Length: 268
Ligand SMILES: NC(=O)C1=CN([C@@H]2O[C@H](COP(=O)(O)OP(=O)(O)OC[C@H]3O[C@@H](n4cnc5c(N)ncnc54)[C@H](OP(=O)(O)O)[C@@H]3O)[C@@H](O)[C@H]2O)C=CC1
Ligand SMILES: O=C(O)C1=N[C@H](C(=O)O)C[C@H](O)C1
Image 1 (cartoon, helix red, strand yellow):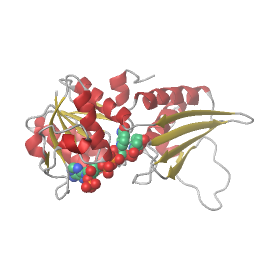
Image 2 (image 1 turned 180 degrees about the horizontal axis):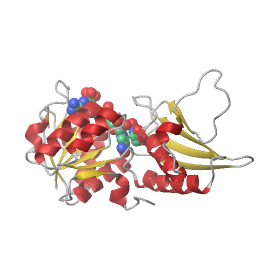
Image 3 (image 1 turned 120 degrees about the vertical axis):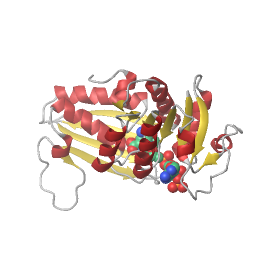
Image 4 (image 1 turned 30 degrees about the vertical axis):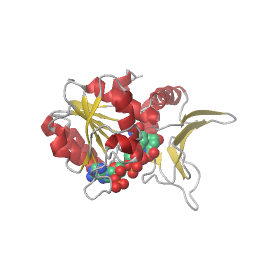
C-alpha cells in the first residue's frame, strides 16, 4: 500500500515514516509539510532517522495523492480538513490522528467520507482503545453516584485541551451511562464553583516536560475509588496503530470509521 505522510517533519510525522518503513505491505510514496516549512526538500527518511529513502518532502499534497493509496495525517485541524477533501477526490484512505477538531471540522470530514475511507481516532494505540472499552463497562456498572473524572498529562508543546484521548474516554464513559457528553461535561473549574453536580464528567489537564501521554479515568464513590490508567511511553504505539488502520481501510467502502472498528472493539 502506497502511503503519504502529512506533517512529515513533526513529532508524529517522523514516527509515521519509521512505522511505514518497518511494516511489510506498506511503502512511503510521498511526504509533505506546510508551504514555507524549512523541511521542504529534505529526505523524509533522513529526517525520521531511518536513512535516505529517496522521498523528498513536498509542499504539494495534491501531486502526492494522485499516486497514493492512503495518507497518514497527524497535523492541525485545518490541514486535516483540506487533506480530507483531496483524499475524497483521490478515493484514498485518510487516517486522521489530529486532535482539537471542532464540529465545523467534523462536518467537513463527514462530507469527505462519502468518497474517502476515513479512519479517525483521538488515540491510535491498542492500549487506549482497550481502556475505552473498560471505561464504558465501568461507567455502566457503577451508577451516577460514582463521580467520573478524567485526568490527562502531556508534553509542554501540546496545543489542544482536553486531549483527544481524554475526550474519547469521556465519550466512552457517557455511552456507558447512556448520557450525552456535551450536556454533562465540566471542562474547567476556577473560583467558587459550588459542589460537584451529580452525573457530570469532569476533565483536568496537566502540561509539562516531555510526557508522551498519560490518562487516568477516576470513578470516585463514597469510601472507595476505582482508577483506570494508560501511560504512553513511545509515539511509535500511535504510528503503528495508524499504519494498521491504513492497511485495514485499503479497498474498504468509503465511510467515517474509528480505531475501535479497526481493532474490533466497536460496541464493546
Ligand atoms: N490520535 C493519536 O493517536 C495521536 C494524535 N496526536 C495528534 O497529532 C497532532 C500532531 O501532533 P505532533 O506530531 O505532536 O505535532 P507537531 O507540531 O510535532 O507536528 C505537526 C506537523 O504538521 C505540520 N503542519 C502544519 N500545517 C500543515 C499543513 N498545512 N500541511 C502539512 N503539514 C502541516 C507542522 O508543521 P509546522 O510545525 O511547521 O507548523 C508539524 O510539522 C496533534 O493534533 C496531536 O494531538 C499525536 C499523537 C497521537
Ligand atoms: O499531542 C499529543 O502528543 C498526543 N495527542 C493525542 C491526544 O490529544 O490525546 C494522543 C496522545 O495522547 C498524544
